[in-house]
Length: 113
Length: 111
Image 1 (cartoon, rainbow over the protein chains, first blue to last red):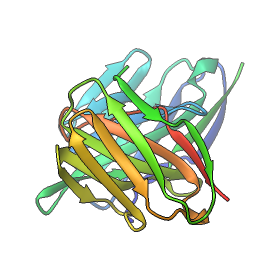
Image 2: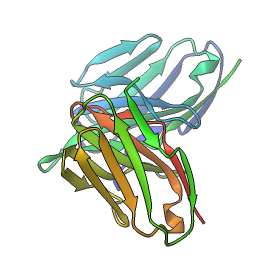
Image 3: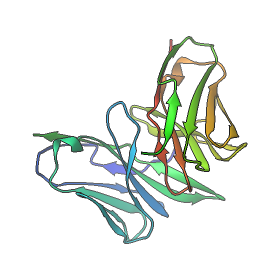
Image 4: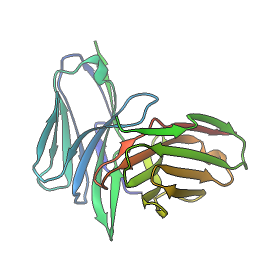
């Protein structure tokens, strides 16, 4: 099925560094969602974006809905060890009369204390 | 955290046996979803529900059926389990179709 291009696939950083990841597509989306998944658990919704150009923060996390509606970015500032996990983006678009959520394959983040 | 539970959390079953996974929510959300998560494939939608007795297929629905007889419960059934259905299954709920909140997952192994 269709998937978003999420990059990078993995990152290994030092504690305190800032992190950036993004999702891109050739399709237009109405909503962008960013999730974090810890090992053995379900994904947890971090940020939801509903308008092109929207910039939303949740603590040290900031996400943006790309102005073209084809991409989204997630930044984590001053990373800490508990930021370790897999981050997923998901884009919601209309598919006929249905709304369809398309998922990225995830960015695996490792933080060296 | 959204009030969503899944049962069982772990299950091992043999090829050819029927399996039913349960998703239960206490949030009174309209939308409920079943996903499977496999390495290299990410999250893939199996079936979803937009109300009691209203369900539709996702992208990997073959071999799966669902039922939603009341708002709080969404059941996923594998009529005859196969080894390719070994996976981690996640249920998700949403008040609207714009957001989804996930349960803790069920790890299913088909031997």
